[in-house]
Image (cartoon, rainbow, N blue to C red; front, side):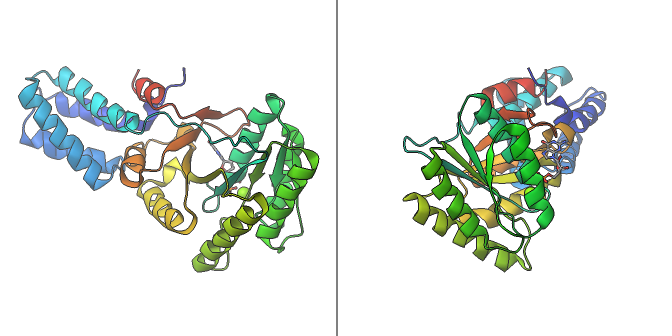
Length: 296
Ligand SMILES: Nc1nc2c(ncn2[C@@H]2O[C@H](COP(=O)(O)OP(=O)(O)O)[C@@H](O)[C@H]2O)c(=O)[nH]1
Ligand SMILES: [Mg+2]
């Protein structure tokens, strides 16, 4: 089982030092709050965790530092358990369409490759839509992943209308009997307003081609971005009705605190986690399993 301990390594090391003093006093709580904030925990979440610990100390009669540490781990793990199980929505009527959104560099294209790999391995026919038409390199990158994963790709020229590429990909999927369309989108435009209105158009056009909303609008978030991830999620939620989150690069972050807050603050389920740069480095987000593996 994958372990995600590194996400809270620094926090736990600091807690060990604090507990080394042997007492759980006001100073301990203050320092713990600071440590949680330094791990990028949202202020509201940090406050709630502290309240929970104080209550636990009172009601569960926690006096041993070691017991305190275990209680903190539980408080963190429970936050991840809150959302309940969440799989990807697959429609009875082909094609199922997943649209991937998010700012530049978070891992949209790589995640598309990983999801394609998962599906082609199971024998599904997958079409990638090269909807990031903002840069030529983005189209080429997706082409490389298409050939590596055995997916097909529908593309156009750099600068072409992103939504028309996705429209064409959905038509192609219907014509060729593909079960899945994975649509890439641009993470950068000339302006942020531009990006959000472009996304709005992509979703409207997808709905027109498909006869229903996309089955998932997956917002890809880089786990290293800390609090900023929450702000990005708020903006994309407004603009594109995000149905699920993909947290990438959790293999390389010590800022797990931000992720405790993501579901808490947005109530959008985490669906997948990216654990590396290779195409098999993707995990379903199973809250219980994830929480259990955080600290063992
Ligand atoms: N370590 C790690 N790197 C990742 C992960 N996902 C993506 N990357 C890397 O992040 C960089 C940007 O990814 P890309 O898919 O091009 O981002 P996009 O701009 O959102 O499409 C690339 O170097 C990827 O290899 C992950 O889960 N772990
Ligand atoms: Mg990309």
